[in-house]
Length: 185
Image 1: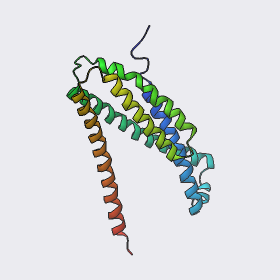
Image 2: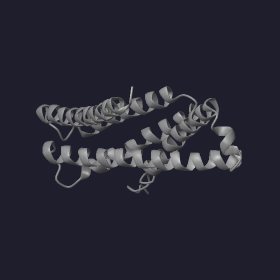
Image 3: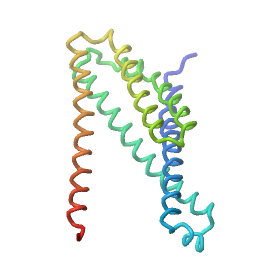
Image 4: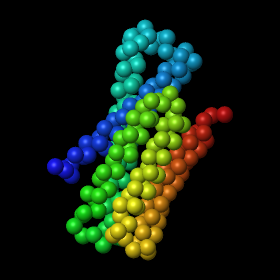
């Protein structure tokens, strides 16, 4: 018996595991910075070391979970919009075909958890998994797309994600510049 919903929980597990690896790295980094600045010893007077680390881990896990969940929501929306614009499938059979690709993110999240000491490795694993999933996505949809539709679908995804990254980068640069300009020097 093959149930189409057997892999429906994989995205949640992937998000949780990626969030955990990113939160563990960030927690270690923040604790190190607090020790360098001399703030950590003062915090130890009010809280235990494990209390500080667990609270920090919980908050960072929550933040990372929200970030990855938002990315998943955007990704699902972009995938379904691209299928609406460029696919000949009207019943949604293509969505069932690509659902099995969630294995890629689940396996990559476990790999990222093993390398939680390096944010560069976590990012490389995530980007590699995204690229592999995109190739898997295109392979599974190749029967339902003409070459022109395939080109349109690829360009739609590339333009959306490029625009999003550029908008976020612009916002950060604008915020950074306004912060630096407001400092009394």
